Every structure is written in structure tokens, then in C-alpha cells.
Length: 216
Image (cartoon, rainbow, N blue to C red; front, side):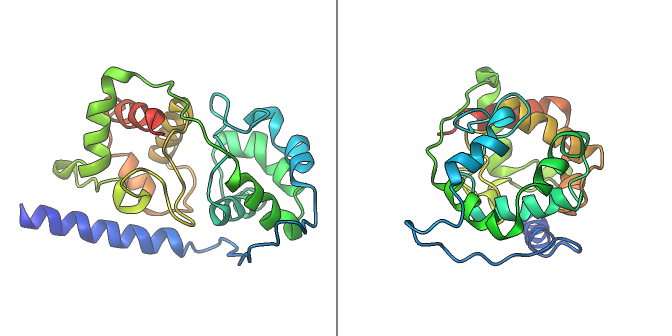
């Protein structure tokens, strides 16, 4: 048991390093802007660039993730990755790469800060009967397959932190497809995720995605 716990802890630490220090990502430092001094009008900017796919309140729609309440630094980093096509899964390349190009780098921090303050809603579109199994995987991992607990990086309530995304309440359909894409080898931006996701069975992916969709 001690060996298993040590292995999981080691994987978690290595995962953290891999995520925070990707090889090609442009790491932008954001300083919180004054609340009354926006270089752009974030609501209008969001409506023009985000709402069509992510919904008018950017709570997500199908496989388009919820942006509301997501961490500012994570959003900024992903905009950079979308622009450079480091996020190379088919959805990102088809729908987001050309959109991200139109978001000016000098406006990214302001837009992301605005999105991060928007209220969130749990999508609750998963299979409720699988939620308990998903919670177990999220909190303890799958030691037999060397899968670390998701909470090591994403927090005990899937709230995320900084460049680790908030997953709680995200759409089941988005999370499920994203885990499948990790397992298929897309997006090497977080070197640990393809290896982790590829060890999860379809049933385990369904369970984790379902559990997360119900979190407030």
C-alpha cells in the first residue's frame, strides 16, 4: 500500500512539472486590471468571439466547454496554445484556432479576467448512476493501473488552480470527449495526460465525466 501511494505521489509531482512547464507554450504573465479600466469591452468582445459556440452566458454547449468561472491564467494560456495550434485535437483545429487568432494578445488578460468572474452553473448532463464511481476515481485514482487521483492537480472539489483548469460542473460531453482525445494522443501540451487517459476504460471515463458534471 505504501509503495502504491508513493508511486501515485511521484506521478502527481511529475505531472505537475509537465503541465506547468510545457515545451512550446507561451507563458504570459497577467496583472489584475483595474475593475473600471478595461482596454476592451469584455461583454461585447465575448459576445462577438465566444458566445456562438459556448452559449450566451458561456456556460458551455455540447462539446464546447464552459468558460465562465474558468481561471484567468488557464484561459490565457489556452488562447496562446490555440493560436499556435499546440492544441491539436480536431475540435480545436476546426473551430478555435482561427477564432483565437482574432483575439489580440494585448486583450487576452482582460477578456480572461472577465470570463473568470462570471457565475458558473453545474451542467449536470452526465449519468447520475455513475457519479459515485467517478468520485472514487477522481479522489483516489486507479492504483492498479497507476492512474493518480485527479484531485492531486485539479483540487478536491475540481476547482483547479491557476493553469490547472476548473473541471467541476463542466459538461459531461466535453469532458468525456476530451479524455478520449487525450487517450488518442492529441495535444502533447501536458505530457502526463495522454498516458493517464489512455489507461482509463470507456466505463471509467464515463464515470469521471459524469461525476464532474454534477459538481457545483
